[in-house]
Structures are given as C-alpha cells and as structure tokens.
Length: 640
Image 1 (cartoon, rainbow, N blue to C red):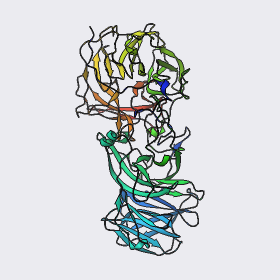
Image 2: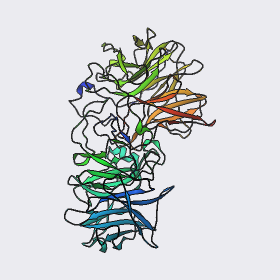
Image 3: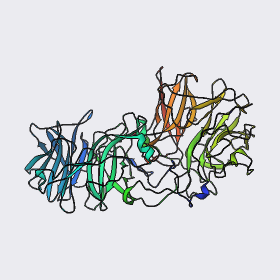
C-alpha cells in the first residue's frame, strides 16, 4: 500500500489557450521584452575606458563636444579620499589624455563629478569627515582654469548637480536627498533637502520581504521630459543579495517623477552591477551611463567604463512565458524602461553563458521556441536528452542532441489520456510542468507535475519500451498524484536504492519495483535552519557528497528584481547533517546538475530573472567542484 503526504495548497495556472483573454497573475514567468540584461549573441565583455585605477566614474561633455572624465581614487578595498583629483579628456571615448590633477591642499575628497552647465564647468565632491562641496571653474579651459569653491552641506556624501530647463540648480546627495539651490549655487541650498524613499517596485508582500541597503551615489537626470533619479544600492531577501551573495551586488536603481524633488515612483534595477553611475549625452544626442563596478559579480572593478543606455518602450502587455494571460509592465514609470546597451556583458561569470538552440514544438501557440525548468541528461545511447515545461504545456516533450550544440525535437512522449476520471484531468485548466527524464534500472522514467489538481499534482511515468521515446505508462497503480506539491525528481544512490525528491527538499525512498514507496517522506533541512530553496529540488552524488539543489529568489522576489538562483546543500549521509545552503550557480534556479560524456559536471538552466544572460532557453555551464574534506564547494566555471 502506498502512503501519501498531506496535501498543501499552491497557485494554479490557467490553460495556455486563455493567453489573450485574461491578465496574468503575478507569477514568475519569463518576460523577455522587459529584461534588464539582454546580451546579443555576439555581445562582448564591457571594456575599461582607460587602464587607470578609478571608480565612481563621472563623464560630462564640454563646450568643445569632447568628453571629460574624473572619479574616485582606488585602493584594494574601493574608493578612497584623496587630496589630488585627476581629470582626463577624450574626443571619442576611446583615446584618453591626462588633462589635469587638481590639488585640494589639506582637504581630501572622493566621488567627484564633473558637469558642464550654464556655460561653465562645475565639480561636486564629497569631503572626508562628511559634508559636500562645489567648485565652479572660471573659464572653459578646464586644464588651466582657476575656480571658486564652497561647502554646500555639513553632512552627506556623493553629491551631484542638475540644472533644470528653467535654469534652476538642484543639489542631490547620497541615497536620494534633493534640494533646490540658490540663484548662485555657490551660496548653497534654497531650502532643506527632501529625502526620496527608495523602494523596489513589486507586489506589497515582496516589498515587505526585501531590504535595500548601502544606498549611495544619487544622480538626477531629465530623460524624455521626466526626472529620473538613479541611486546605487544592494537589494536583499532572506539574508542574501542578488545572485545569492551574502554581501549583495551594487546595482543602479532608478525611479521617475514629474517633479525634480518629489513624487517619485518605486524603483527598479536599471543597470545591474554598475556601481555608482553618471549619465551624459554625446554630440549625436545618444544617452550614455558610466560603469564603476565594485562587487564580486561586476565585469570590471576599479576601472572606469561607459555604455549606451537603451530606452525601451514599456507599454504593451506581454506573455510571461510558461504561465497564463498577459502581463502589463506597470512597474516601469511613464511607460519607459532603461537598460544597458545589449552589445555588452556586464556580469562576471554567468553573464557570458549562452542559450542552446532548440526546435520549436510542432503546433505550439507561442511564436518562438521556449522551455522552462530545463532538464538535460546523458542517455545510455550516448545522446543528450532535454525536457522541461514547454510547448502548450499539454503533455511532455522531448528533444535530443549528440553534442549539446542544438536540440532536435523528438516527439511528445506522453500525451495525457482525455478521460476526465484520470487524476491529472481533475482540474480542467491544469498545465504540465517540469518533467525530468532519468535512466534507472535499465529503463527511463519521467517525474512530472501539474499546475493544479485536487487529487495530487506530481507523479512518475515509466517507459514500457526501455527507450527514452517511450511509450510511457503510470508507474504508480493508484489513480491519484503523490501529493499537492510540485517539481518531482529522482535520485539513485550508489547502492541502487532509488528516491523520489520533490518541491523544496522532500525525499522518500521508492520500493524496488519503483511502483510505490518504502517508508515515509521527510524534508531535508540544512543546519542553518534555512530551506535550500522553495522549488525545483534535485539530487546528485559527487564523490562522497550528496548534493541537494533547489531554486530560490535572492535579492528580491519574482516581481521585485530578484535573481532565480540554483542553491545547494551537501552532506556525506542522506540523514545529514546538511551544510548551510548557499548559491551554486546564479540565475540557474530549477536547473539540474548532470555529467557530460567526459565526466565533467554541468549545470542546466533556462534563464528566468531580468538579469539572466538569456530567457526561456536551454543552457548549461560547467561547474567546478572542490572537496575540502569538510565541505564541497560548487561554483560555475565560466569566463569573466
């Protein structure tokens, strides 16, 4: 007799044929059109402007249409205060010539910004010990001009300057403190600074779960007639920043308003990993931004760079791939989304990953090939097999590749019977999600789940032919699913025992025939008390270590600019203790670890968050594994 766990609730989705008839729920379907990073296939790593240690880079365009650069001096830990500020000049953003070193005497400063406004050069700077200052140069010859200077505030840091269309100047500092200045800006502020609250756009519950820290480097610009406030910050959820780093990453967030000092929208991630930024227009009117990466994932650290800013219309509702309905891009104020030039890569490591082409599922409603919950395995015949949430989600599809370079569609290997009495047909709008293909005991098995169903939402199929193409039949005799959870998988231990693994680390031993269970289910929980992830659990054994992977949203939720990462925990016994969970592969949530023909470990993924290197395509990266004796370290092996 087979036992079942007590059911629990989960969001259901509607059938794909309702795509154009109703709005989408706030689920984590892929939105290709409004990605923050969307590198082209030929994209290259962003290169530094010059080989000099400089961060908090600032660029302005002078009266001669040349570019003028300055920034903070750098030591091994980041920006430092210094009494000597360096300026460079370039006619083309490629060849830079040292222009001047400004000696501040006994004073020290950092985060300087150059601005050419109202026919003059201006320099804003943060002073050591706190407070901000402003320099106004006497002539347009920045190399030799004298200047006047004034302290603007006694507190604050990272100052910036905006001159509005009506000639009014605004002083912007730190985390988004803004005040209008007197007619002569050197005379200071005309009133107190207003603090803009920095909150990432998203559902209220996700905003409650999210924290924004290390705010700095506010910059104010007018774009398409609206005021855009840029602030550098690190976003966190459940103690981890984007891409699973405990210390987080330095992203540029942006909000917009009709007014320069009030009424701002919630923020969204505009320039991932870019550090402190400034914006400028070239002679052709193209908008640019500076890149000053400081975090572990940044493609460049301690050297200045710049990129064009893409202005993406964000007014059309689009399909969140893998779910129901259409979703409106309401989180982008005034129907405009800003992102970096898609010709470049901005994230070290995973930013270089590329998707693998796959054939379109015949008769699918979506216009392009797509897949979610990518599962790749090496079959006993020497071919790689791919499956996952795909097509019209009305069955289980299979692809094949001899070399992981292109996946050829094989067939829909299991189409559910139309019998309404079958457990998987109890919910008329159910979708088939996250199938996995496994070769155990001389045949193939498919673990799969449903989006909805009151008689269970996950189960197991067995190939009656012993081939990956099937035909497949239910492995369990009962007319019901295992329980109300999702994302089922299989694991075979070195002693031949097979286990059913699902959701967030639930595990249960299968009987020898794999048509029922032997014993009760339990949940794997690491020693830090944190779940490994909330869905997409899979298990492999690497050397002496059992490795449980699962997907989690880090930095923010699925609608508040988090990253969908592959997390893991490891133990030398299934009984534990299990090591504290940590990130294995950023952006690879609900992927799986598998071996290639050479025995090398790879991680499959599909790209689900706004900063993934691609979206809803099969992909994989090699992973490095290091057994320290006391732990197993897993990380992606990718080029910077």
